Amino acid sequence: MTRPPAVRSARGFTLIEVLVALAIVAVALGAGIKAAGALTHNAQRLADVSAAQWCADNQLANLKLARQFPAIGDSNFTCEQLGRSFKGQLRVRPTPNPNFRRVDASLADDLDQPLLTLSTVLPRY
Image (cartoon, rainbow, N blue to C red):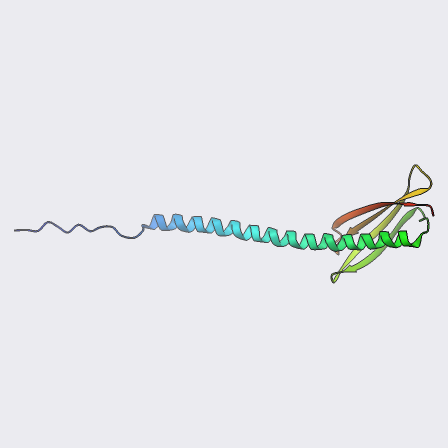
């Protein structure tokens, strides 16, 4: 009596299946790394804008506390917040009412990238 040949059951994955799985993992990891980089950049930008807003608030508060009618023109200033240095510019412009002046405080980072502009109106005291 002869025995039928043994049937081998296939176990494991084929090379194609392994390559497809690796490609899916690579795409998922790439997307995850890109998302993590964007989160890091956004967190740094938020910190920079917050510190720049503190600088602008300080400059405008100084003008209000001085209780002097500001002269029309531009002036530059620097501000240090959170260990970073920011470049700023105060722009004083007339308004239709001569008893008020518009003051814009614009700030940029050390690479001259604009961060924010904060505005207020100051009265004649």
